[in-house]
Each structure stands twice: as C-alpha cells, then as structure tokens.
Length: 241
Image (cartoon, rainbow, N blue to C red; front, side, top):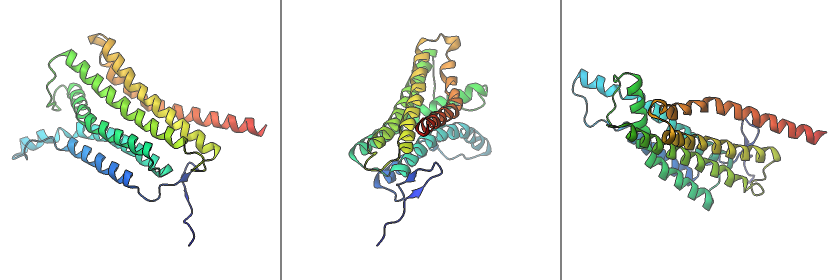
C-alpha cells in the first residue's frame, strides 16, 4: 500500500496536515465556543420591533470582534495545515492560545463596542459602563496584553515548527519562510505592547492613538511579505553567483 503524496500549497511548500489532528479539532471547538460567547450578549429574546432594532445594533461590534477571532483561528489552522504537528510543545502552545482567547474574548467585545459607540455618537450600544478615562486606559492595556499574548503564541508555534526542520524534511526556502512567519507574528505582538505603552503614557487628548495604531497592521502585513520575498530572492541570487 503506497502512501498518499504530500499536497503542495500555493506557496510551493508541502501541506502535511491533510488529516485533522485531535489538537486542531480541540482548537476549532474552543474558537467556536469563544465566538458563541461573543454572540450570546442578549439577556432575552426581543419581543417587539424596537427591541429587535436595538439588539441588531450590536451586530457591528460582534462582526468586528469575530473578525479578530477569525484572524487568530485562521493563523492556527494554516500552521496546522502546513506542519501537522502534535508534539508536546505544540500542544502546550495551543493550550496557551486557547486559554488566552477565552480570557481575551470579553475585553475584545467591550473595546469594539465602546469604540463603535463613540464613533456613532452613541447610536450603536455600549452595554459596558466605563466611568472614567483611567478605566478606558486599563481596558486598552488589557486588550493589548491579550493581543500581544495570542500573537506571541502563534510566533512560538512557527518557531517550534522550524525546530522540526529535519523531521519534516524542510527545504531551505520553507525553513526561511517558517522563520520569517515567526518573526512576522512577533512583530504583530509588538503592536499590542506598543498600544499598552501608548495607553500608559499618552495624555487624555492623544489616548485614542493607542487604539487607532492597530490600523497600521494593514500596512505592516504587505510590507513584511514584500521584504521577505526580496530577502529570499537576494539569497537565491547570491547562491547562484
């Protein structure tokens, strides 16, 4: 009986996680539960049109929060698809990811609710009461710590995968990309820590910058990928010379 050939992904690297592992199944269930916690924020079923409209106003905060959860779920799913690892360190890192996500889910929803309520002039609901600017600082710091922790765990997963380069028979290019992915996610974690620092140091007028700075991730990602490709191309060019 011959073994099935390893699938090759769009990046040209093998996809070893063709069969879903128990670790991936557990992670999927945990993220689904976290998404359910985001959705179940209505104390009772709306009984009239006005209550339904009020309940639906919570949809934007849910969608924004779900998008962040989906980003991290997708990161773990891609990692599992690439390497299919279920060793001790991968298990511990995944457990840490799940623990942080479960703690992180409520500050995530609260911060998005507060931000969207402020942007809409109070039209969108904010069911969590923040009574002072100092309390808002704490919320931003809690969110930043959670964001940094989850990103750092994903970075650790890629570093751990790189340590299995011989067992996984990684090519030089795949090993380079694996380490680059670990570095990229470490950079994402620094955004969370920078947000915490800004929330701690900025005065009240500039405090919103500690939240809006996350938008720089939209630029960070493409720039990092461009630099990654350029560095590899130069390595190949040097090797061919």
